[in-house]
Length: 573
Ligand code: FES
Ligand code: MG
Image (cartoon, rainbow, N blue to C red; front, side):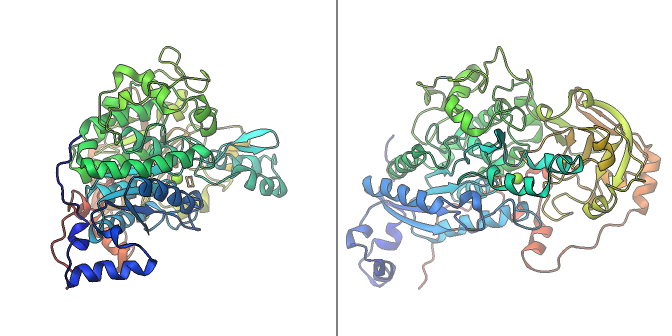
């Protein structure tokens, strides 16, 4: 590829022999850098989400050092900088409240600094979309180095999938299968090494998305965090970003509509998380690439499930890596994918000539898939005027067409207070409805949609029920769970008007979710409905509440959609 623009952006800071050139260079030189660092070498920012409070990204300082090695080898100058890090298992009320805030940190950190190219170090769920969103609004040559999954969890001879195991804990305690001591031992066995969740949860889904969008070197998304090949990939990525700057391979050349379409097809084939939808739409919004909720159903729902990983299947990321990984999947998808340019300068379809499947139970063929049509189904109907989603590969076949009476929880607190009440009127055919967990409602649209079932039904042996909410669910979760109902209940969507005992029908084949209440009755209830009190009157949360968009548009802030570019004219003096 030809170099289009000879002048490096960083030379706007470093290129002059006057007062401002002196100021920009001199203070940086307190680190002992030689003068030639500032005389026309590509300057690469390594955007690091390392944090001790984000355990999934706890190894990224080591990875950054290896990326630097590659940058220096290729004649570039590395500068590592921290950005807000979002630890999925710790942050209250939910990391999703802060995805957009972290993306602002990334965007403005890049824009304000003398950088020519960007390496994004990602890992835990939201750290991937937030970094890509922020970088996309600037648009410099950018690549992603995914942090990689943990090794397989091992507990008393069985494999433990991080996250997916969590959803069995209540069951195991209620049925006395697990003592306190058992649970304590399982804790560290589930999290065996550095890295993010080892299931095809949101983190692995996001790493795959980054690779399918063309933002990583081939094969980067599945390498376990502690495998030596992770560092090799990091070093090669460091070398590559320097060349990308020389080639002016900016993000708009990579993140085209075709790349987004390929990501959707592949997400279906890997059994990826429902969170993929909301993050991919937010990234598309930054790139000004049109992408509708309906596109996910249209492009993905008929794609076969090829990857046998939890939560849709039985294996873990380490097995997938050894089985051949994403390259095998891409080659198997073949004609279902289109050519899109990736950061190595080749099309995604050219990137895996050597890919070989070493375990045909972990990665299936299109002739023998795990599920013939696995992608996300987008529902419509009077209960979700702007759509809702369900992940069929993680749901129970028998419940995909179901009619039952609503058991309504007005909030998460209401749910916790009543779910295990022996007098709660609920049976296996009931439809559990949770309100108040959408983008504005919680706030931040938490991963609570896969509600645990009531204790009394667990003891009867019930393992799944239809559940509906305006929230999300963890990528590691499963069940017949309808999510992302839009508009959400807190702004007066019809979900807000559901009452106990109302009949609700789900028909996934016909993509319908209906509340069987007459229009007159709904209007009467709407007239009585009172919006909830605002959840914040100041600070970031106030800004978030004033600007967040609904789930069907990706839940970005309306003021963040689109790009500002990399140009900042005014200097500091
Ligand atoms: Fe970080 Fe799952 S908790 S990736
Ligand atoms: Mg999660």
